[in-house]
Length: 137
Image (cartoon, rainbow, N blue to C red):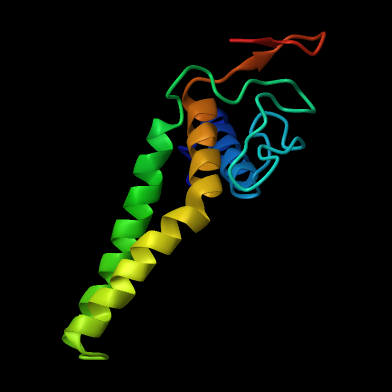
């Protein structure tokens, strides 16, 4: 790090890293202990450890669709174009692979996309806990 880096910038980078790692592990981005999901597609309403609310308002997780779509589209494009140019398979076959990929990948990434969206929200609009364990926005 350069000498111009302030303590708050270092703390912000550490906070970003912490929230992203918690999100990728599917843990509460506030405490890092509680689980976010009770099953593949079902989420807990609140963190079982710290009580933070996961879905702040109706439609809150619509943003996770953008994360899922962006990852799927960028990764599909980065695989399809080289495969087409280098003629690894006939185009018809590549299209079927791409079709399968674009169906399966969003399903597999559903939980992580929601968790990352929750983490980004926590970074930019953090929910705070009161000392008695209840949440406060």
